[in-house]
Length: 379
Image 1: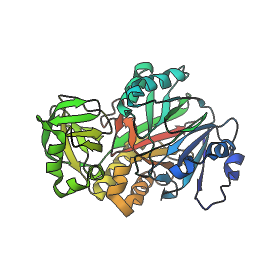
Image 2: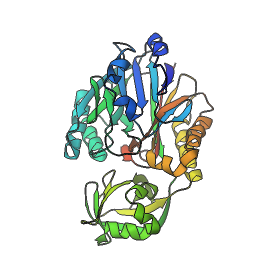
Image 3: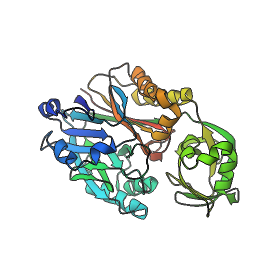
């Protein structure tokens, strides 16, 4: 397996020469919405090679070997020695279509010998939890899934997903990987710290939280935020909610607040929460988030040999980027230090991260988390 990265800035001449010469089997694209919204972007990327599979999305910040950028286009070409690829895509009509869209993705892949699925989807007006539930109903248990939901520089208005047929705001796209020599491993950690008591979810419907302990969820949330409540819903990115097990143990699953409904007293979350479950508020420091990224890197690389022919796909949350501010670059640097600078890194700041649970359970939709996927071929 070989990896070739190319980063284009807005002022660049947009030369694809290095990638055209490299002739990758797979081209991963992580770019500013300004790039992906261009009418000629798909035709431009298609020039890399007629036999190259395309997968990518718009971001809330791009990650590459060079660090964290904004308004750039990160292109990652991957050439495999023996790994076979398959691809499929569908359109998510609305949030209610999310489960069925997930099923369509799974059914559209060639599942014989399938080992791993890289999945990218819209970051707004979808239910990411339902998408994954639909996928899992149709895929063998041995197949792992990772990826993320697209961003749009924090505007939460319109995101873009690149698939084999083009670029579209409502597209859900996936690439399946299969091969005996292929190593795919994913890990997720967050680094947020809980505060306050556990709160019982007394009323919720999918990703809309109506009541906590019998009170309107918005009222409870505002009480905890204090002066930060005036900045809702934007300030909700700084104070996510963690889903907690009945015994009080951390589940590792975080839910971001995407919107509020004053009339209903409800919170719109970036993923489902179960009625009868427990939630707890979270906050973080930059150092704790950096530690979470390091833990994810240590776990995904444990026992594996790093080299320049390894690709580590990093999907981190826009909320983490907002907390870290100018220090966001350190998150990528901390992962690179764990890999000793040998594995190439690339990815995005997203509106949802797809990876295993903190206890290595099946793939979940995370928020406010660093999720890392390790791709390599052995032997």
